Length: 208
Image (cartoon, rainbow, N blue to C red):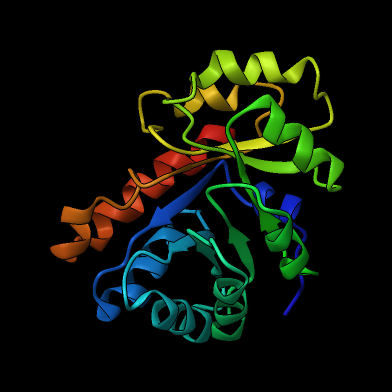
């Protein structure tokens, strides 16, 4: 299995689906639907008690998927997710101990302010999540951050959907966005995998 850098993960598709999987039986068909639509990098959030099992199931059964873990807040989260087969990790915020614990694992920590961006840059990071994007000023904030931080590249997440994803992707310091709109909870619950593939295909076309 090829080891990816965090930039390579961000470069796989314009959208990283942010997934909250409630039922383990949904994990594999959901991953297949998203991959079939052109979105291979999948952020499985640690917001349910089946999240780690979902990561393992996807890693074992969907070879074209690149399963990652989201909502990482402790070093233990990282070690458990890595053991389950996660190939990258995403955190809602920035913490030096998480950067250290991530070690060689591709890691995308979140920042929301210039101070956090500066701390992350001083820790040697170049690729960051901007969260919560819309609540923290959205595109104007990212445009403002581009001035003092020209080397930073962001994956904005939080409040991003079909209506504004393209606007974010048009920014020079944005490589991809994160969002849950490509896998609506009601579609997952109903097993509407073709609907999800269609939404994924639409999202994947945002970078064409």
